[in-house]
Image (cartoon, rainbow, N blue to C red; front, top):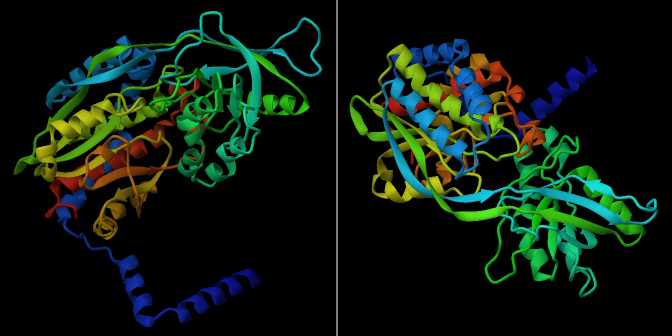
Length: 482
């Protein structure tokens, strides 16, 4: 009772400190249940789409085929092409107008990868110790027999600068920057990822500039079950390209501990190949608008995935909930004023070639792109919608949030960005489901990114958010603010 009284007193004090008009405006916005730019019938259609998504197993069925039957879909691979053909056929079967948009993508192939300690303080004579690692996407190779060198460990770029001159030359440099699991556990996995992924991206170039012969990066992710997390890396022009791998959190800690005790020598074998760019495709499927077919609302995910797992949460889930938006419009016989365009982007993981191609090919039409939705944060429960663009989008979408309230997805929140691929569509309002990311980075880019990690109900919730939002944007009385 005392706690409640204190909370009430604090709330009253806060209200007393705010101008009366400010309080009134805020309460008015919270209580506002108007339909905005949508009619009663349109709101009712949104509710039907929401409920149908929660009962329909289409997305789950499609995801199982994409992951279990086709498997990992690294750009340029036979599986990626198989996925293109499969998704295009599925969209045609729904009656959408399908085209394959050609794009040139990286064709990097993972080879053998192994690490082992061959000398360290306290070792038993004649032994070796395995280091669990995986090559970073785009990495160059060691020679077939590997390389052997001492290991130097640094927690950050700043720590590397403080090392004695020449300390890294001829060595293997490990960036041991921990993933902030506490931040992720509070639901801010994206910021935790952003703080660590810079070492994966820039680490090889920094290490090469100091004369290192190879670079290791502590895996960017949580759930330390000795799982290495892969992901793309970038080589700066003018610097030697050196082999690059991610090590598990446990092995990063092991190396940090041992190197504090004395010299540690490691053998590293990586044999990936960077083949000439391959021809691939974005899959584009239009559910044509009845009044303004030239105006487009995109629903999308990226079709490629890394090759360690089967790409269920990254980004098979985003693909299938976007497919389900078209499926539900067809199933319920809903034809919005504007065209709903499904896109399965190719090559998000290694640079976004497909999205760049689309942005270039459709540059003259972007003024007629009313909005773009991308789902690329797994399949965790969505609390609502992220909106990147004008601040007015939040209030404009509030009626859509009210429709999604029964599935716990009512929150409409501003965001600086909404997706890697749609980020290339400059000037277009951009949206994404606001998903629970607490466990996403446990499996992200690992061998554990498999079908079983997806909760069927939460996948349906995401499908509902995408379908309702796509329809709302495509049938609104006036376009989204831009």
